[in-house]
Image (cartoon, rainbow over all chains, first blue to last red; front, side, top):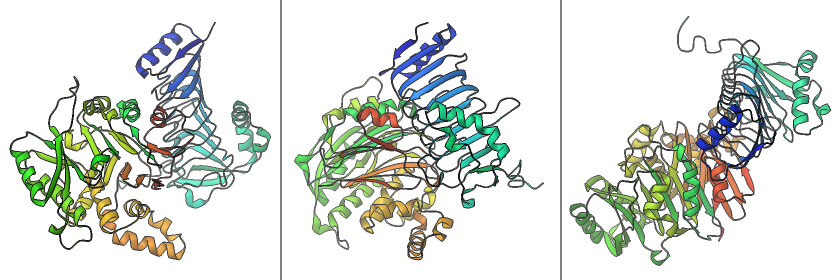
Length: 246
Length: 350
């Protein structure tokens, strides 16, 4: 089937998203959006297995509630791509704004460049659903804030150290944050602790590392060692007793 | 949630308002149709040495008669006219925007090194708090604020901002949360050379307001952002701090960060925080401030509101969204996100 090509220039997001939803519902497997600029909620709530190619800079909440499709973005993303996403993937050939993968429930968000503040805020997992956020560059402060589940992996390509901003895992009570190289303890947020990244972790994460590197044409062998820091919750209830006495 | 965008051409080459209208309208979802506005610097070259006083009049009888009388007592009105407006179906004309080009009498103010500015500042404060039905919302030289209750494109078309050419533009799309939307509550807020657009809220408003009011400013706009304009006027103009230092005083590093700094810097920041404690702004915010010499953008220290920067040659853009910058300048070269609390400064270079 021929891909559906849409010129989004000057188009409001409502008719654009309507077109996408109708196309996926009618069985279209490939959609190409050209001249995208600032249209919000692209792929919002779409279910199915379509591939959506986005050329340009999509607006906020890209792929929100999405369940199934893969969006590949040739450009930067704005705030909260992958917001409460259920399943599927966002492959971003660029950087992204604040609150990337906000409350994400499943699937994967790959960002080639950097992400802003509060990446992975309140990501969660349940049963077989385990969301993954991978960042090629660096992240600003409060990475994995209030994280409840899932995986965040930051490579820090071209960065030394990988992360310089504070509040990593602030309020984390589930899931794990893996950061290339060492992380200064002072940058850890309340409720986060740093533990050794071992061979078992590497084996477990090798498929994710390879997947990310393949998507962006990066040689994965340089990342297949145990030179990572692993940040996990110090307890499952970091704020127990903060507002009430037990 | 609000939307902001600002641009400076550092060589002072002037741009008309059409592209910033497009950029702000792209962020319509960041507002609620209850307030939008624009400010441009360099728009009144024929009256460059006059204070351009923009006033909202409820009618042209009592309030205007009183303002005329006050201005004529304290200086000379070189020219005055109604600001041209064009009826828009989606915008209700609640006030009559008027402009005076005004030269204050220098010898009437004592106890100041800048009698003209202090004269005009005093007139703005006194007219806004005593003349019912008149509100001065713009009072700088060779600049003008154009704002109203409405959507960005409607407000722009109401004033036909494409007819104005400036080397600095700031624009704002308002989503009022804590106080109701009205013309005076739309951004930008201006006093003399300072203009401010702001996304977020200043939760330290009470403390900041008491501080500026104890220094001779009156808050009359029913919203938090006006204190930012007054803080910049007090710290930047009256106390003579450079804009980087004003930003550091308003959004300083945390104490634990200061503790880690080299001794000299630590001492400076400790002193600054203690001196300007009541000027420290808390709460979520992204702000862009303009003067005739440049613009500065910054966020709160934990970055609770978005801010993105674009550069292309002599042009620097600061906005809530990257797409808005690309709408203004599809050829923009560099896009980056500044750190929380870190000032982004664009200065005129000529």
